[in-house]
Amino acid sequence: MDCRVLGEVSENPYVLLLNDLSLIPISHYFFAFLAFSFAFLYHFLEFHFLQDLFNGFRGSPVGLTYNPSSPIYHGVVSKCRILHARYLATPWLSSPHFQTVFLSFFGRPPAFSYRRELFNLSDGGTVALDWLLSSDVSGGVFSTNNTIPKGDTTPIVLVIPGLTSDSDAAYIKHLAFNTAKRGWNVVVSNHRGLGGISVTSDCFYNAGWTEDLRTVVSNLHDEYPNAPLFLVGLSIGANILVKYLGEDGDKVPVAGAVAICSPWDLLIGDRFIGRRLLQKFYDKALTTGLLGYAQLHQPRFFRLANWEGIKKSRSIRDFDQHATCVVGKFETVDTYYRRCTSANYVGNVSVPLLCISALDDPVCTREAIPWEECRANVNIVLATTKHGGHLAFFEGLTAAGIWWVRATDEFLKILHSSQYMHVQKMVSFGAQSSLDSSIDQGPYVNIAEDGMVAAVGNEQAKENRTEDVLEQQKTHQRKTNEMVSGEQDDHMIRPEPCSAEIVQSSEQATRRQDSKPFDVITPVRRCLDLLSQQSRWSFWLLVYVSIVTSWPLVGSALQIVFRKKLRNVFPAV
Image 1 (cartoon, one colour):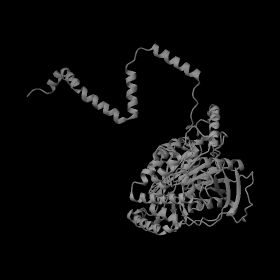
Image 2 (tube, one colour):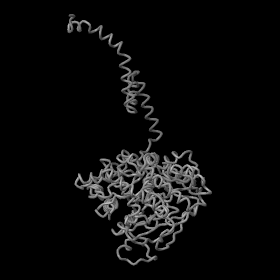
Image 3 (cartoon, one colour):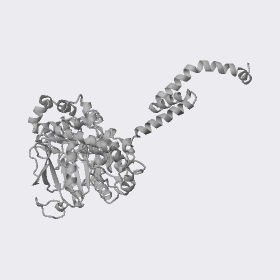
Image 4 (tube, one colour):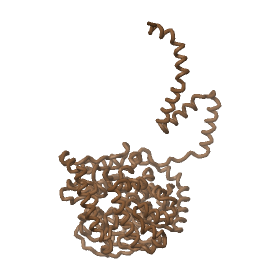
């Protein structure tokens, strides 16, 4: 890997970045004004302001979902005052649509400059790493030669932006500035083709593309082995983050992570965003951003995908059909969504993870939140708020602050000072876990609710992953022996018994079966138990049918047996 420091980042003069939603050309300001006005009217129609007024502007409590035996909750989250307090949205921004649009155009980001580092990947691709050091916001003199010492122990926060966002997005700047002001170093890993960087290979990033994140994390860990590394993913970046953590499990050299407004399930999100009129507006905005991104990198899209179909796309699903599925050779768009969904990997996350979502998010629906999966994993705490919109969460009368930024800073600070930071248990960078992901098949392009695209083709990486999987199989038994009972190992796979134990247990079972008389009731009881577990409705329906069909015979028998008693009780008149 080759890295270069360029210094201060210059703004891209060709496109306007609309938060995490889309890349909107400057000529669409009028369209944005109409949308903002519509959101303003809808804000009062939903009576959010009146609800806050009747509640005395106390806000709503933050809902916390966690495993009762979670050490992350009891040792870290239980000490977070912000997560145990109430969130009150800015009164004139309580509508989720108003919040989201306001963040896109009037996010009020702090003013500062990044230090840019170009990071060249093995397949020829390039990503821009934008650094903000703690010395940059504490009065230190900006210098392109000022680098972090090799043995520095200052924590590093790696930020993964949303689908069409880069380090210049308002919410990214809020997070970076507050984190650096606390005394930590921040680096934003821009996706390929964003941040003013050209696409230099036939690989684009997407909603399920975790290889770039894996490579950047590995490089940061090698460069600064003594600095705790924390990850923060936002929107589609949160989907990539959770998927990466689930794919690699204990192998990740990450101390902790935070996922903000994750879409969780891309298939459910696709259904949601095309369901109502307002959601269709977001669908149009995202599609416009995708078309703008494709236009910026038109030569490669023209060669890799169906360019004529891309130009005629009117929705995200249309774009996926003509770009993602064509380049990635997916059978259907739904196949692509299923393979890139991060909810499938929640159970294998081994890193302390705080997830924050707004129940009124107009882009990432609450229907996709994996509540039970988060509750089952002792390493995850899910925090949900009644209001907040998509990545907005403005607070205060002047909307000067963002609530999730403060909650993230407090969580990472307490986690860093505790004993619950994750420690890498097996060093095998670049290896793929036993969970299959969409990046294994390459090449392909993809996007999600936030909308970025990716085409991948890297035979060398595939060979390396094959060797890593073989090595992982050899060390599987050794890894499972390192589990610590009672803490964060409840979600790990237990080692299977050896063949001798299997033979012995089967022989014992055979002897027990031979020594017992033939039992008819036990198999029937097992079938009924299995049926009741799979579907209680089916079980009770079976009971109902049995009673109805057997009642004539049973009723006749009862009438004969109790005929005399019934005559004594009810004598003839």
